[in-house]
Length: 303
Image 1: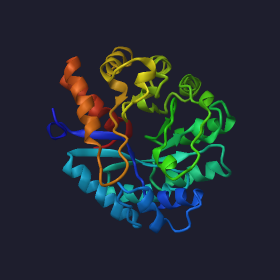
Image 2: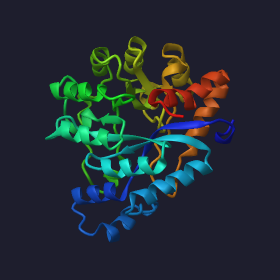
Image 3: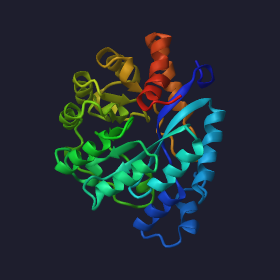
């Protein structure tokens, strides 16, 4: 089965904007990014400065790959405006996610501004930003987020590898003690109307992610990336999907690729791998449609 044979929604795409790269370059002390970045990123097309122009590239790419909807994520705090511009340009095609640090100064003002600009999902990276999910500031964030309709909280757990930061020479160490999906459980119970998304099947905390999702009906798992963490747990992708389907069910799995930059564009190889697993497991067509499209559409009220 190919992407052209079913309608697809991708729940995990990074919008690596010009502003995103400029902000990272500044953190790395790169004074003239336009001249330096092509050397550091020789396999990348540097994104256009105009956010709408980058959105058009993604629209054309998703059209070519038969992808109907996609989540676009602002991948550094402060880049919300680039994804907001893309969401407006997409006219219903995109759902805007934004990396958000509840422990940052004036965090609630930032959250409110992002939501008012049309973004829908706050992406929390507690291990990266060094806060505990039990921090009262996280509660304040989720309380404010839950007041909006069809919003969600994305919580990155488990292993964290940020290739772009490494290539720019930036420190990307993180505190793994803060990345356990079990820390999401209490939050999901306190905010039952707010969906929580744990990406990459928990990224090495697969058992814990399953425990949380099995006991909290508002917790979803996204399937994105190469899932290299499987080697740590001695699992392959077929085993991971088989167990997730058995424990969580097809209704709360969200297909994603973790696509990010051009010229690679949409990472169809991830789709092919996951679709091959669907066929190997004999997953019913209705459940394939749930995982690869309908769950995302229903979650954010699209279509």
